[in-house]
Image (tube, rainbow, N blue to C red; front, side, top):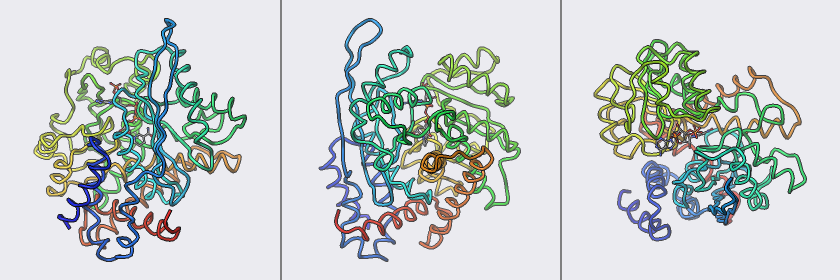
Length: 447
Ligand code: NDP
């Protein structure tokens, strides 16, 4: 199989030159699929793998806008419609200077598998722009979003492609994007998720990715008769996913001690309690400040230019910032310091050698495509509420989120066992999702 993977990867690299993150994401999935392809030769005959790595459609467009000084700015916009075998395209939009085609192809590819695990009928996509909302005024962000949507609107729709948020795209950006869509498409529909709760958004959507990652960790811990209660947790990031990860850790009786951003991390050994978290949310979501200010305000440690993975005394880690933020060295340090639960809120935050290390060390390791699927799952439920012109209570949505995470965990666990690698959630997630999508692709013919 290793030889076949290498051969296949040569083709992927030739067709997608320089797209290193995409190559990384594809290889990780392929490494899980050997036993499945042996058991189901029909998937090889129908070239499912060759088709699944090829986006169904890629849209790249110019996004011109005018800044507050009257200067013309040009960004690049993207939408990767990767796979619609099990439902309309669905996946977030990322606004960050590092956005490029390869990054979004990796995220779209991950999204296909993640969505396949949620049990909901949603295909996979991703999009965004190299626009950096940081340091921009609200009016600049609005003008950018309007220009971005002026092209994107013709490619999306509540039955074809339903974008949502991701890094740099939160409630403010979704509002501006939706406003422009409504104006030019002349329809009020569920075309975006993550909307404000007063105009079609779902309760618990902002919380869902972070809450879901903690629910997934709780399920993994249950397999050893344990729980989050009393555990010390390292959290990276300080955006949407990190904030609600800390909130759920607190609710379940754990103690989160770190938060980070692109500049550095804070270490609050007393724990980021609900009041401090509220302050951090104001800092990040309203004042749009830097995490360093938390350390100044609460008089705790701040490490410039570093990530939180060398902090000692923790049992759990929740990487919730960005891809490849846990290096091989970080992974070794985490386990040496006693961390034995890693639940990924971010997408592909651990480098491949780090993932192998966690698996070898029998860490309860929940890969992003399983552990952070709560966000897209509640987006799916937002679509269902929009389609039925109704809205469900907070408790109802949270109950469904918990159910979905419990089922995702069980699906990964049972699939890993069935294919001979018990406890390996990477194999469980990749195989379970692949089987669902491959079956649908086979049924639908060569498309
Ligand atoms: P936000 O924009 O709300 O927050 C991102 C956080 O990560 C910020 O603290 C940001 O710091 C930090 N960050 C971003 N890029 C880097 C970088 N290159 N190096 C160091 N820190 C960085 O995004 P989200 O919380 O929504 O997303 C976080 C992760 O979770 C991403 O991997 C995303 O794909 C994933 N995810 C998000 C979902 C969602 O529902 N929102 C769903 C599933 C996965 P700074 O302020 O300095 O940029």
